[in-house]
Image (cartoon, rainbow, N blue to C red; front, side, top):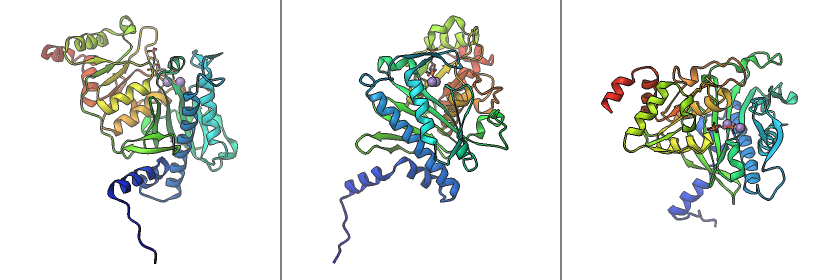
Length: 350
Ligand code: AHG
Ligand code: MN
Ligand code: MN
């Protein structure tokens, strides 16, 4: 006679956790077993696979070829291409070839979208991504990330991908992978934000935080203060105000993903404002600012350019940049009040 085997409560809890893998979570979270839900779940699984391969390569960076240093080329942004930028870009492409899921991929490292013709009749999705965010950190063995955004192709693309030039509300999924002291992935499909930790022994992203909520306020402000003299006066006033307040800590890693990860969990604000030389700042809308804005908004935070919500911005071109102020709602609103000229009232209180 077969007995129903029951483990103790702690063992059952551990088993449930270990089986809550990324693609399983997407499917159960969508609450549907429709073909679309399966596609999105498979798509997230492929993003996870790309993340695992990049994580593996980074973890052995000093031992393998093509992980450290620059290629000698300059990308469409005018920035030196790191070997790891190129490798990670290729990993994302290879992860989606023959997947039937994604017809186009657009990234920071490619001037034009990359088409996968054999997927196009069926693959209705476009993946926009920053393969390595914070790549100047690689040679110092510091945290870097990948950022991703999924959009649905609209209409017929004549090869100019014009339908990608739409606001951030059009994203159907977005998130990041953080290659830190552990590798983590956070995603949203418009139903909250969920974080996973890569268990290297299983080779799986396992759910570690479900329905993350960003604190309303945090003590961290994250900005490159080396640009202080390049900002508008209202931004300088905000930073001077923060300097006078007790309890704030400046934290800036050089990788947007790492800085926003901290803020998502602990609260605070990340800022990359425009400068005299670059009024639209440095960060690219479609594959940096918009996906992170989607994620942080889903967690109860805010993301603005200073003048409008990041998710409302319609880019003029694929590689368009925007200023970015993102994080806890109260902290973003405080910055906004300085930038929109209500600062005197606030400064008087402080
Ligand atoms: P990337 O490596 O994809 O070009 O992105 C780097 C970005 C972002 O991650 C970071 O916050 C910012 O650039 C750092 O720029 P500064 O060195 O100008 O502060
Ligand atoms: Mn980046
Ligand atoms: Mn990058």
